[in-house]
Image (spheres, one colour):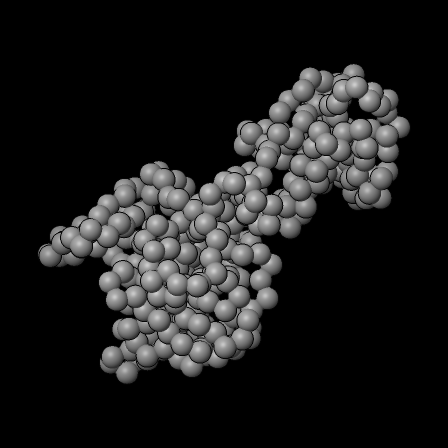
Length: 334
């Protein structure tokens, strides 16, 4: 049977990521004249002329040497539309002819902050929370130990720099944390555990640095943000600890009786999720999962509990009190 020309299968996340970055680079106004020259198109030194989606396909085939890149036309058009909807690309008219959207011309108008230029997660605004999960899953680690009953306890942590895992205070104090944590199939010795005295925040210091592709960036949380939560709650009838990922939204920003800010969100928090990260599509770590909140007798009435997290503003303050010289990054859009 003859193979279909168009590639219709869902693309893997690494394929989508590569095409998106290629599109953004191609449509950059700063590269317009260079690209036009390589494509043999007219170059006007007095102004910047837009390029089309068809030009992009031609560039990838002839300049980048990717054979039959046009077979991905369906996916390219879908990604261009997402980039336009995310305000990364601005439509700039049409080229001659009609080729099912390939004639549309664009400029890339996305300007990156200093931190965004060092961290790829801002692409989540285009590729969604699935991309955030794909890029951050290796930063999320299970924390195991022995609880007060002598049983096996588990929580979740997030690598926020090369030798620091962020988690909840109660993960560190309600069990004796094991001497090692497993990160990317490697056991690394725990150097120290440091819980905060008032806020449900703590850190684990490692005795060896972990190679990270980029540094995690904290950001402000907003009401009704779409979020991704990840953690290692025990799954019945399974042998190993599995990363569970879930989408949700921020439902409210509240203060507890001690005046400490908390977030209420819709993703389900189970035992083992505590300390797990809360991400937004902007690629920011905006909080960590903490606890279920129930009033007395609510469980008897089958009332769904609230799910509570610690927001980034409280995390940053607590981290600075635990370790004043800790290396962390917070997005200020400079």
